[in-house]
Image 1 (cartoon, rainbow, N blue to C red):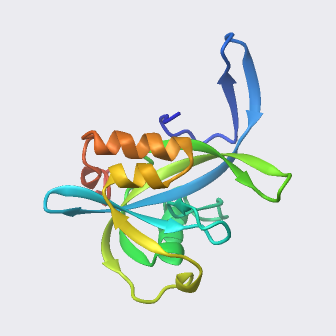
Image 2: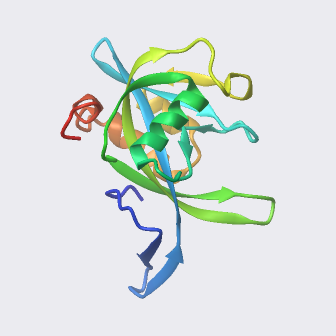
Length: 171
């Protein structure tokens, strides 16, 4: 489910019969690199290192870094892009991060829009990942996390432009 971003590690989830269940969620921060081409929104996906699934750059919180700073660093390391990032997330999604074949973590990911200004020819994880620009409707078909699918479908249906959310002093 696409939800407004929240900075909590422990969330309460309502299940079908309206009982509440405390579920521990691990926080991650993601960048959604984007650009405009001929008036249309395009987003940048990268492949995960191990399973080669299409994802957006994301990482774990780091001491002394704000969420948007972590997201910006991940965009550089994983996708080789530099740009203006919003200081507040515009969305969040949940997914299961598999640590091993039998162990996983439930994660909540805050998503920060990143208006790409520069695409590097060489970057730290270039040999470990692929990157690809596409419209959000195509991205929705390639990602596997339900929350990301919903995010891209929302963007492909004409959600407010991300450019108004990235890079301003009031973000």
